[in-house]
Amino acid sequence: MLFRRFLLDRVSTIWMLASLATILLLPLIIGVGLYLKAAPLFEHQSLTELLTSSAWKPSEGKFGFWPFIAGSFYVTILSFVLAAPICLFSAIYLTQFASKNLIKVMHPVIDILAGLPSVIYGVWGVLIVVPFISKLAPFFNTSSSGYSIFSGGIVLAVMCVPYILNMLIEVFNTVPIGMKEASLSLGATFWESVKHVVIRKSYAGIISAFGLGIAKAFGETIAVMMVVGNRIQLTHNPFDAAYPLPALIANNYGEMLSIPMYDSALMFAALVLLVIILAINLLFRYFIYRAQRQ
Amino acid sequence: MNKGRIIEEKIFKVLSAMAAYSLIAILIFIITIIFIKGFNALSFDMILKTPKGGFYYGGEGGVLNAILGSVYIAFGATIIAVLIGLPSALYINVHLIRMKRTQNTIRYFLDALWGIPSIVYGAFGFAFMLFIGMNASLLAGILTVSMLITPIMVRTFDEVLSTIPIGLQEASLALGSTKMETAYKVMLKQGFSGFITAVLLSFGRGIGDAASVLFTAGYTDLIPVTLDEPAATLPLAIFFQLGSPIPEVRERAFASAAILTIMILIISIIARLLSIKYSKSNFK
Image (cartoon, rainbow over all chains, first blue to last red; front, side, top):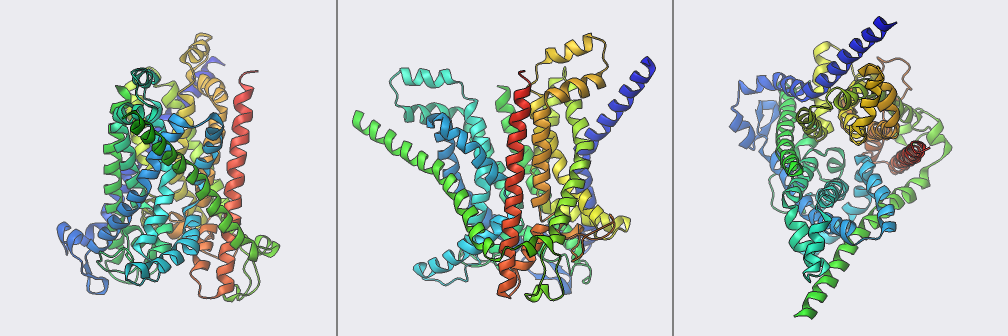
């Protein structure tokens, strides 16, 4: 009986350790796997050429990823500019001013927003945002089908809000209430306490939450792909279409086996995404981790 | 001077309140649009029938294949995620309870894992599939989605486990139980509400994710019976139907979107109710 219990304990411990090790090694395995698949590409083109060239001619074996990378950054940064103020202000309101009842309502609202599948945001984007942008374009002396960088940015911004907001709320909640009280007792108004104490104290946390939001937006696929137009071009006009990196991977999986090197190129695109996003995540998570320890 | 400060306070309070309330407005906006558009084409045929001939030209049928495919994939992936994720979370909170540094480092990596986009998992799953000579199938879809949701499950469950006071474990160990018994009979029981939340959150993510199954699960009009058959998924059904030039098919995409939204809302409500139920039972 005793022996059985200890044997079970042993087996369970080994299983637990193996599971944990598998999960933690997963990014490494994915990275190596993608690298091996992408490796044939490096024999023809150097890494810098792949990343900075804008010649995309798969049938001639020319793969320049710059239009895709630039498109990704354009959409992501636009979405960040739209989402950041809303997140910051609502996080301040929810942690500093809001009544208990509102917070009770907001929890499920944020959870559902975060839980809605990206394809639903995509459908909403196609129905509402795309027509809106095509009607908006003439006011800026340009025309647009609506399937544009601007639409992608708006849809992405809505998707990122719950994600960034959750982190910001957590950050603001770690500010000791005594510090705010000290500021209030010195005669500062509520808003001044927020501005000078809460925000200043959580500076690292805010930057990190924003950084992680950018990383999340950068890798978002389906919703963006549905509204962004998917045309390979370099443009400054947000009413033009773009072709972000994730959309490139998702759109071309069908034909990737028929053109030589195409599958390597797509795997390389996935590798670039993985490396950029993992690097941003590790960096900003480290900030949060450091801030929490203090 | 004082007046200026008070006006500033008022302005920013209103501004931040507007930001917060706008979130509620956005959620209601999205869901009403999806429902209004979706309910036009929604019928029992949509939910109860598989696509018949000519479905993609506006013919008869429904998206039962995609609904079931999504449920199968999410269900299978959740089982794998529980098998791997539950022991991992327990290990962090039982075996490593005295090693705060290791715990935090592991959490740090898990958080970073959470950020990897699903398209990367999809691409990797596809490469792996080719490598071992597997076809796009239910099994490949399940494996890929399980990679995506396991970190979510571990981190969500771990969050609840980490709030359980250490004295409870010590009491259990002092009574002579092994670590495994402490883990599964004390910690799991105490953190059961967190476990339910983690499982349902992962399940919801599994149903809704499109990018990871795009390459791996394939697409078919039939309901998969065995693991090596391809499976349609609801998000992809929406995506493909929306890309069609035929208005009837686009209408169906909206109906499918309404179905998916309802499924996600139901899962979210169940998660909330169960979590309330089980966390209350702790105080009896």
